[in-house]
Length: 199
Ligand code: GRF
Image 1 (cartoon, rainbow, N blue to C red):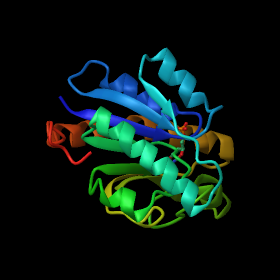
Image 2: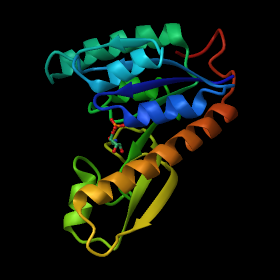
Image 3: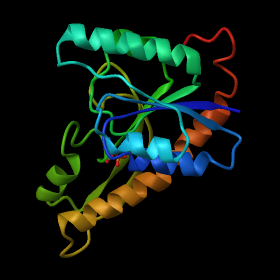
């Protein structure tokens, strides 16, 4: 049985897709960490009976990040996840935090990286009239959307497609792909966090 923790800040549709895909077992979602008190993802966690913890950042200074990350580390130490999945987590994790979970933190980004790193990737690729768009699941390193790519899936832009229609198709692709990658990683890392795990 592999254990997954999720970090999210917003709607949480990917969080929900992951939870539903993992429900038959053997892997489990041990908890959700969220930095936004009003995020819809907290309601989803409650409805899905997944433990959650709110870890507000109290601003965007290095100090507030340090405090929040320390709190997350303490919680993660209890949950002992094998893999940590970022699912719309809108904070940049510090090199120290990422270094503590080497090759165990993954992220999903709605572009074919290295294109369109950062915010509003779907809108920017749509406005640039890209013929091919897509999603990337990657390990998290010290940069923003720069870590080693695990899997990419592309979509051909449809004639006359609106931004909203494209966004819907991109999210559907995310909801199919991210749980598959996570299940595979959990299978590979099964039991790694053990009693003496680094978390
Ligand atoms: C997704 O598009 C994901 O690729 C990006 O943030 C969005 C999160 O959406 N990193 P949701 O909160 O999972 O609905």
